[in-house]
Image 1 (tube, one colour):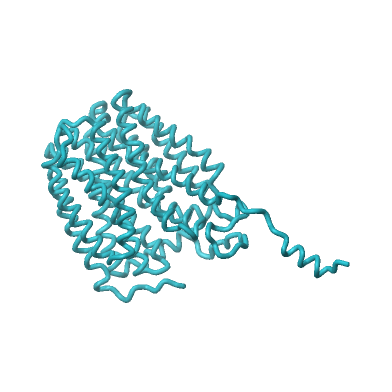
Image 2 (cartoon, rainbow, N blue to C red):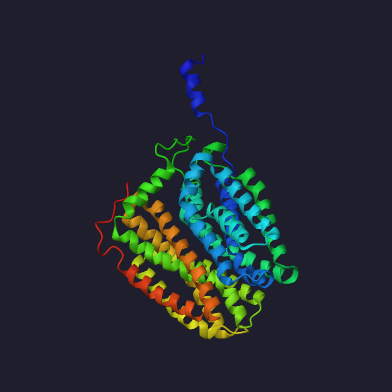
Length: 437
């Protein structure tokens, strides 16, 4: 006769539902990859539209660059707080809403006839939407869904930003040249809208929502997440308050602000119109910018490999110094056609584009312990502030002098400042914060 104890024992060894052959985490990562690709492409689109908008409306490049600057600024400042919204309302809702904001912001531009409307649509709506799908989104996805392969997935999702440029910029440049800038804007709006159903159907907030554990988790017990005891926004601001008392934080902020100024703000925004000033077709310039995105992926992966084996401070100093040299030469390389020297710049600059991210994350983790990811979120915000300043500054320089040469020289000099600051990270700081076991 079977006893109650035997029944309990039998029940305890009864196998549960067989786990799927392909873990749901990979589908979540795939949807995140698509969203991040889109966010990068959507954010970079104004670079294609500067010349067409100037020709149709007569707006100065300073005005148009102002809208790009607002976009870049909100892209960075939204990121630390996007995590708080995801904690409160869930990843799926926040990302779906972000895509809708991008779609509305881009779609409404076809009706605009004043500069403030460009700032509202491309600056505010698209900036907030894309910022909600930035590095905070990557950290949230990988932190919740992956234990095994977390580093690899983080690298791939980070590199998705470069892939977004690769996919969107040449296509949008072709659409703008063949059918007008409004067609390109509507293409962005439609693409963002198409991704929303994928997010709603496949993206989930936690593995426990579908009866799973994170990929590679040691425990097989499905445990619902514990509600946070501290509001995420409060924790983010608290981490900022603590970190801002150290010299290391400000060294990282200065270096990464210059990084943003010399990449997204300057090259990402003004390379296409600058090349056009020298007689190069916009489609060709957009293709070169997309080529930077290809080598950006290679450079990011290699930089991550080097960060595990070398002092991150020295890597950052080297990256910034080499970038400075390349920017000092750019005004002499731009021409109506591509040539070997220009292609060498594109390859070199692409390898160095976001190579700064892995060592910067490593330094934030080393000196700020468990708060490292949050601190890096604020450092990333400084990256976008620098980008916003450079986007406006380069446009103003072009309007005043008729050339971007001074902008390239100033950015090159600032990169040498970033190299010196990065080499000195931690030399006057207290002992690095220990990371809890």
